[in-house]
Amino acid sequence: MAGAEIYKHAVDIYGETGVDVEAAINTLKRISISIHCWQGDDVRGFISKGRTLSGGISVTGSYPGAAGNGDELRMDIERALRCIPGKHKVNLHAIYAETDGSRDIDELEPAHFKNWVSWASENGLGLDFNPTCFSHPLSEDGFTLSHHDKNIRAFWIMHCIASRKIGEYLGKTLKQRCIVNIWIPDGYKDIPADRLSPRIRLKEALDRVFDEKIDPAFVLDTLESKLFGIGSESYVVGSHEFYMGYALKNGKSLCLDTGHFHPTETVSGKISAISLFFNEMLLHVSRPVRWDSDHVVILDDELMEISNEIVRNDLLERVHLGLDYFDASINRIAAWVIGSRNLLKGLLHALTMPHGMLKKFEQERDYTGRLALLEEIKTYPFAFIWDHYCEVMGVPVRGAWLKEIREYENKVLLKRG
Ligand code: RNT
Ligand code: ZN
Image (tube, protein in one colour):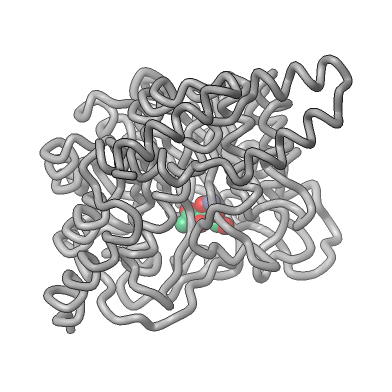
């Protein structure tokens, strides 16, 4: 059978379960994911050169070819985007500012991101943003917005305000709202004697950060919780309960990172509950291996279940999807392509699930039918639908992208000093 026939056959098979594959494909075309710039240079950034990554996150591996400046990073992202179907956003961190080196991160301005903005606008991309509350001398003792020293706290408050202003500029200029996500590493390695005071300080610091009026048409503020990190194993100030309460009370949104919960807890299980109380949320799609290790996203059960929850609860407009992982042990551009294609694959998979039939079985208490169908679907010809999607979107089909990335590696990456 030729490609078109195979695809048609797959469409018919899915049709038998009530699934409209063409409609699924048209929906996927409109989904924009946020691709994290920091996979390209191991979360180093340009203004913290020489500083080591801190805050309990860690990149391992020494694969050659990391981007060393804005032009290299943008060029690498462009290369990756040519292998990823659809129109997407790029997620920046404050440390990717292009300054003359005289400024610290509490004094960053929109102008330091003008190269990013002109590049994004030329390439039809939206931009998201994050303050960088780590890898800095003032975060080295493990505390930022909840620091006991009010001057250090003030520094981080200024940095977060500056970041929200930059987000507003990105959103306004690119005419696409920018998500500004705050994550801080604050916490204790060992059992604290006082869990409350740092949380009181964080609450007050956030109030000051959000006192700065930023147009919600251009910025969506999100807060990212965490259960533990390296160096904050026993206590994290910005826990899930903390931000859930803070965001609900103050009209902010949550960011759920798939690596930030207890290993047996799943983000897929939380989305429906949160959707009842929040209009929007952000997900940091990552892959924890035994800890919050930020491995490259693969098409695993949890990714498929997260996608199912978003699709079957009609949350595609309200759940924003960002990638968050960093692997320096493989080609970094391949890492972007693999993770991004997998997230899109997960979504397409969810869009082609017979949710109608499955829900009907469930309503009728026919759990036998539900399990039987769920298991049969696993061997449906999904691959041909995905291949067709790549083809119509003008990106390499199946593993053909790897050859392109290897050529780029030889021509560009391996020549970098
Ligand atoms: C850390 C958080 C955070 C970072 C990025 C770089 O545990 O997940 O989102 O990974 O901001
Ligand atoms: Zn994250």
